[in-house]
Image 1 (tube, rainbow, N blue to C red):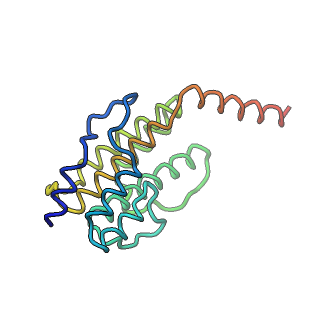
Image 2 (cartoon, helix red, strand yellow):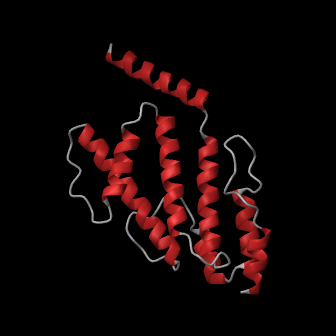
Length: 181
């Protein structure tokens, strides 16, 4: 446990990281640092840390990650459901994990004018979920995993580039028009 205190004290604050400023830590450095201080079981869990949850609910060995993956699966299913409804297709019954707030978040994101705005909204929504799920003990191994998820979310958001996205959108759109004309 003492090594976890030392580990957490070395992790820089990323909670207030701005969109354009450089992150004080990378995912690679985070994983390397954690691997030096965590026990073997926690290292196995760390190696599976991802923003993409397993398709079926599996026990990870971390209460926090199990809850995070459950909420992320629910959000992804709700997004699929709302998109299907928008296209007038049936996507099956809604799972119990899709609560009204998850469905509303999906509706809001799908209804936005730009994909970038939708991604920014979903980032904020996910951060809110993360804040609600993170453990109270900030020196627990689950707190280390919560930090890792927040870092992955931040790095993902920083990869979005409005100009490249607009160019890509126009290329895809022009290709579709070119094929249908």
